[in-house]
View 1 (tube, rainbow, N blue to C red):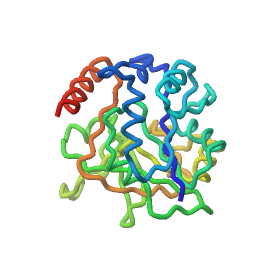
View 2 (cartoon, helix red, strand yellow):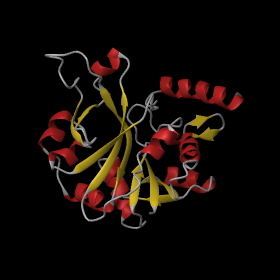
View 3 (cartoon, rainbow, N blue to C red):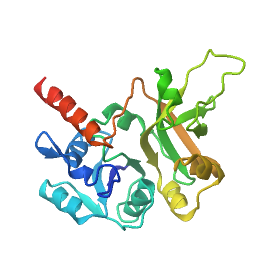
View 4 (cartoon, one colour):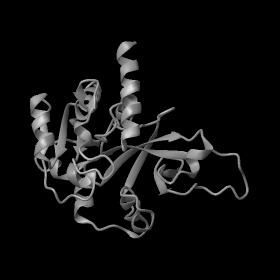
Length: 245
């Protein structure tokens, strides 16, 4: 089974323009993400997908495989789908280009032993929420699932609601998603469903249309996306500490 990792990267962030190229300990952020992702043995190939020539040029300078995509994509999944039209694989793993400290074990965990090719199929990582503030934070997508670890619903609000019991654990979505080709093509050729439109969660589209999204649990998986200058400074300090260990 061939598994390809795709790192969508765009220049036009509202809060931190050009963030894939921001310097972290002497290297651009996208280099750190790519280098970390490449240590995952289950990935046969890794590419950066971008619509920006500045990002593509830096990737070429650092010998990072890069695929140029259209500049009309609304989501990372759309960008990954375009790559899947030219890069053949049995499974595609989408990772965020703004997480230089991305959890390598979570990347490996999202890749199943077998991937059906005759139906739409996707996977996602979840982890336990241990801080009550995270359950209330709308940026943390809460997940509910059945006994077979198939996703049932995801929401920005805390679900399930503790009406008859408080003896349960909240789980949140981690932004590492896997797809087969059929799932990516479905995403491209569909429109946002009812709950995707209400919740503002791209991945919700698969559940709106009854597609299978298999979940895998990873313990203590806490991501740090670089969205602001403050986040960037924090990552620089953490990276310096990691390098000097």
